[in-house]
Length: 337
Image 1: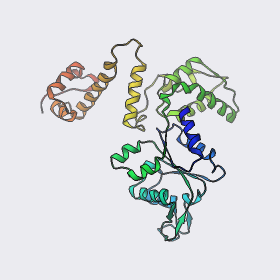
Image 2: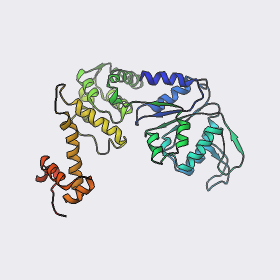
Image 3: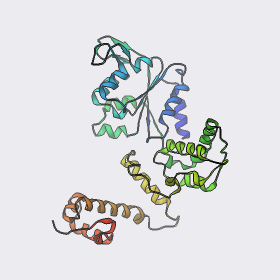
Image 4: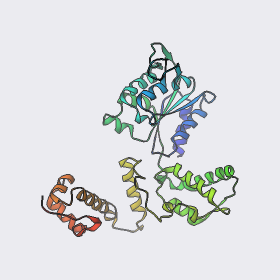
């Protein structure tokens, strides 16, 4: 995070586009605000646009404005966000959600600093600093044709990657103290002590929702506390390790991030001198993959082997090794086609 702060300070005084990358809840909007406040535009407008919250037509009007009669419901002229952010900063959150057509128009604004309102022919020039954010890898999105390569390179002048909270667990005590102070003041409370068991639980938890999730749980604890201590009992069951994550809780993260988290969790639960790390992680994942594919193939091994891309005999051996032939994990198997 010190590297993030240093890059933020250096980039703040420039006009260069900044691309913030990281999972949901890692603090991308906070860094965008910091880029604005630390730069020469601090006294100018800071305008945020959530690109994932609007359809293409509505987002185009939101960004560039429109003139009366340009579409149904356009009863008056409207100033767009780029124009409203003139001489200041515009923060384009979830820019990976934009459509190819809108990406062309964004590229023009970045390169030429000009655009037309929807339904108008008059060109408007702006001096707007662009900060964009994405919770997906735009290089990968570009390689797979889901995001314009030229726009990616134009945005990626100064990239800043915000690490997930599970990769910087040493920051958790400082973050907890910060949020305790903030919510004590906001709610007129005095929760100033932290039970060691509670801190240990928070540092062991994976935090799929990152800093935002931690912030929400601290606010809840402050509100629900009856004394001056944040106790283990005030944490939700999932943080205490007493319940599994709700279905879909991790689906906000990409596959690569999930893989990293899975390995980290497997290593964290192993002893320092453990010599079975492969079976703890890789074999366990393989067992789960085979079990789920068999389930989707109604237990037919030939079909499952084709889906998995492995030899049928290899699959048969793995089914026996993992105990899946006797219905383990709720999966029965059939050798026939």
